[in-house]
Length: 225
Length: 154
Image (cartoon, rainbow over all chains, first blue to last red; front, side, top):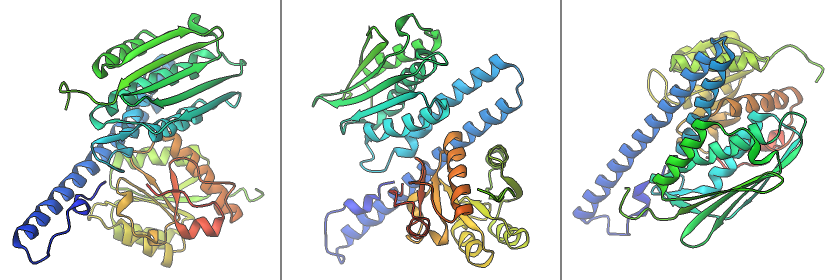
């Protein structure tokens, strides 16, 4: 949470206008903090609800579907855990990618998969963060789940580059490639959110494996705020 | 690890569903949940009566932002190791009120599982098996005590 009062220009403490401004900033900062706190807690509540229901579900297909939903909620929750750590309007993509990759890799529990990160510092508008998070979650989750059938070891490389005007995310694996299972709903999420982000999506059969590149503009223009 | 008695855990959380799910995670990790408190007074009383090894403490409780003071009493008077689980990571005092560390909300199920496993080792061996896992930040005092290295809080 950024304390907005920290950013105020140095003004004389006796200036009544400055004091009023300071009070207004402090109030705004407190309100922002309160909202942030509620969002975080409510996301935690949603995750707990899904997990509790999952524990009481015996049907395997239903359990798997609930886990996919939980994973997506977690991706958005990770965004909110990371927001407000610096500039409240910017979202640090590298830190987020590192965080979510660690989580997804630990959840996958595959010691035979090597995940290599090569991350430039890059940020996108905070308003794009949730959409980006869901796209990344689908792409990496897909590679972890489908590119390497049990027993097949391999490597997933995740890289992030800052071109000055865009943030380029690449996920490349040396798994079973495009012939692998592509879940329809996950693809739909990726397609729709890339459109929303005005991002370019490139999927190539790398033989072996697959390579997906998402190029996200660093500013959203006037379409989103 | 030769000591096989499961660690005893107290959960201090005023959101009933979060507490319920945490209970499950604690049991999944092979630890024993011995109590649940929703307010600071209840937490301190339970901690001193049940003497848990580990207390998982939220900052905002039923009676307000009282988790920090409750944590201090639980750590100092009841002898439990306290771990904060809060959406208010940046509002924690510099000394973590005697707590060993913090997990920021919203946390993932995986982060809690990994952190519980890590802390179980720290508590049993009196030293960390390595740097803390992603999602868990140790307090400066416990980072030195357990030799787990400092992780950036937040």
